Length: 143
Length: 390
Image (cartoon, rainbow over all chains, first blue to last red; front, side, top):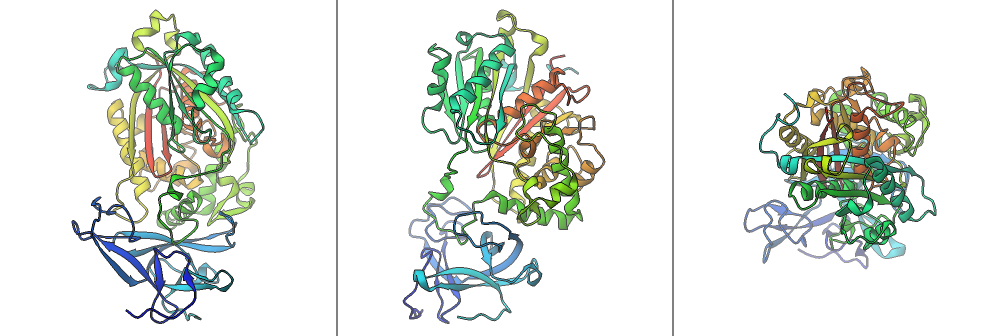
């Protein structure tokens, strides 16, 4: 895979990196040799499905995204520095793996359970990093 | 069938059974400068007086706390006299006190001790969590915040059950009303549905008054073996028997969103089996209503009402004091408060008071069976079933 050219660093380098298109994100998984299941992130100390220690397990990079399962608006900052209101959602990013993510939408009316999302980079120039945001697959994304 | 013959092979029947002989609380309250030792000692002294026990008769103590740091038990209990008793600190998030109580039950049932203290004490801490120290990054900064998880569970519940936001908010109306009648509760004002709904929104459909407050307080219970009740000169009629104690933790989720509910369901089912009763025999149920939707979800999972009936069970008044099964007669976590370490023991103290018929102003009539059910961050679960002495 060709690494995109950018001076920005991922906010969470163990979770994702910029994809070749320069604005989508690839997620890092690890595949268990014992049961074949995927775990996320790739540096987990044990298989999420069978507990295997994942020694020498294969690490995989896949396009970030998944199925939106549920979502709510967070009306107040629940952690320091958090923007509010914002939308949090549970996203099935692979079989058997559900992660909470930040959903980029003007409001909840643009969302519905079951819709496909993809992970894109939210650039934070001042910090020199990019963070992960989920957007509906059909949404236009500005790099 | 009476309580002593309903089930066989119950480890809690050893040593003549395990009984709660004394209860005591320091009221739950918003954070103050009062040292935790004073909170805890108030509760322990009240429990000793309630039981009619002397401190030097207590052979062991389990201290449930989340935020006090190392050695909280000995630092506090030495002020009652350095009798040499065993002191063990237990931390398991919201369920810390419940697990301290379970350890005390096991020590008595094992025949190690005849009189054991379980006390929960906490002050508002810094919220440090192991989940933030596991070396794993997360896609969302709020991934370990319970309010977000339960707001999403609420959204799913309302959609799948066809229930309304107003019906869910009814949990808070009931529990604030119960708390208003509980002198140990953090909130002492009844709230109308309009007030609950108009309070500031936190996450999703959950408003502030549908969320438990943070605070401080203490709760204590003294447990004794059945063999020791007469020998220690205790009033057997005021001793409440522990009929089940079950602990568990979350399994891998089979369907999205069902892990926590399945955990509640399985632990409650095991506790009913151990106690030898059906869920519908419960007169009282104290459960983890840190957020309003939990009471609806768990009342169904525990089985006091049918699946899908949680909101209607509430709306019919079946979960009110005087209803089919009084849920959170104490006011629950939403009304009585949730200081963490004390919360589970406060549930058991409330059930004891009710099963004795001593819950003045909020007594559920003819109460015989009660369950205290807690979950803790992670998630862990724990269920205890208590039975009146007669």
